[in-house]
Image (cartoon, rainbow, N blue to C red):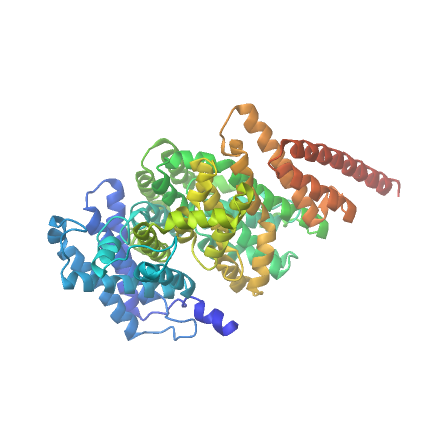
Length: 638
């Protein structure tokens, strides 16, 4: 079993010699500068920009990742050859663009060299996916491609007319429905700007600012170290949008601090994993999947951000309460005064960081051009950089490496979006989407709730070991039509997919955020993943709630929204208290069971059950409050 998992796992990061490292930084910074200039409005033809982006992503993927977890992390001539082939293949398409522009897609013949270059590019994308994401996704893509090739030999509903090699290549490479389709376009022209903003912010001390801010806000509370991890990971993750990057950045501070103040290694890793995963759900950036959602649905990004705000805050409320109740149950101490700075002091030292972050939030909500909003936020980092790096040489160096870091952070996302384009292209070419949606209905026997549960299960299975953008892109074409056919609105249906897909970072057995946390906490990654899923359980429940109660997405009257949010908050409190065994006082089995029943009832779609849950929750809180007063009276009398 372990051998099989190692075969399916992605490669490791390489330790590059100086020459290759310099090349990686140069390609990363040059590509980053080009994409940033385009975000500011500099015109480059779409096709040329995508060829350059894909060539950079593939070459960096081969140079920075090994072919297998057990392979040597040093120089590899195979990797260098594959990187050169990637650049050559994309250079061919750039050189041939004037010719390809004049041909009529699906009508004019492709030359043998066009077909050979296209097949080579597809194979390079598959190999880069194997190295960066793992064999699971490659196997899935190969199944879809095999269906396109052999589906005409099937009988029944899943048969298709069959396709020639030229038709497949034309659709997958030369149309906007395949490899160079919306997913790769969003990655290059939208996601990158926000990733590079996070990389530059990190270069200029942004992670330290978020950590100190969180420390000043909650460090003096009971279980302060764990709460600092939750708040700092949420703040940083809302900008970076990457659970793994969040774990590595904030977890390097928070996990050792939690362990030092009495939290077990497994629990420390789980708290950091759950808190970091939520960053992909928290505005203003929300990770890469939200940008793909704008393209798939046509819904403005600002509307998605506003709709996602309340569920994201409820998620972090849940994680915070889980930490809070456990800290009181275990008797953890607050952090010492010397370890917790005052908020005024933090803002006095670091107020300038609020300028680019505030500008980013304003731009995303006010402008109808998210990429431009990200670009001006990057420009607003210059005052921070000038104050931090006094020397002009150091400033240029920091900007160079920040752009390079941003591009390296895009490797996994870029590869995932490229491979997702191949799947989406295959699905559209064979009309498999409608057949799978019909299959979901059949599996659920036409039951609406069971269809939603089945769709969630499919998304979770797809998400094991895959990055969120790839999971969302696949699920948006596989599961979304089935959800919308049930009468669910477009926004709740796609946001449902984003939430379930985001949980792939902590879903066993291949939970990338949990594995990153395990390397810092020195604990078992599977145990961390299982515990992280329990801490983050509200993220698995909330999508079902807002599908049936879209008031959580700020849809409806103010009174309806307020009532719905109040009931869900009560449900989140009750569930976390039941799971952690504490709420005002330690809870026995009976009171935990009653709170669990109240919490579940408050989150059910039935109005009668929600009212019953609220009555039970109110009665339980009065009972627990009376117990707390009684225990305090006994303590004073003693």
